[in-house]
Length: 193
Image (cartoon, rainbow, N blue to C red; front, side, top):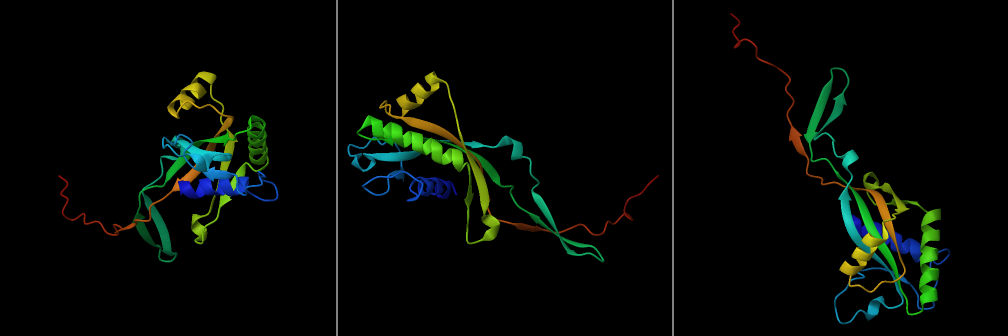
């Protein structure tokens, strides 16, 4: 699911009508800006979307493990299923302009900010309509010392970039376990003195 969300962002940035324009074709890529390989030429003159962190959304954590579905109203009949609650995630990512010309890098970062300011709610559409969801992308500001620390971890080569927080991504397993309902209670074996 994380990959699909990042691909939606990439496609939005590469939109021919309102996205980043370049003579070489698609300019936005989903990749690791901190590649430690000797050959990072595929990231040259690209706008690179890199996932920095995944965080669980704690406000949506306390969901029930059980779901009840009404089978009939009269008489009331229910079906119960046990299923792990979904994980709701916030993604933190960096969008970096790895351009040889600094002025193009600044132009690209400005355009990225413009694109996501006007399109801050995006939608993931799946062939299974139940899996469709919307997510929000917003600028994430951090202090300069933390930004310096992040770039230090990424290899130290600072370039024009912007940080974003994406919320909320839902990841859900489909392992349902049927649960038998208690429909009768035997109280004859209980003795009261």
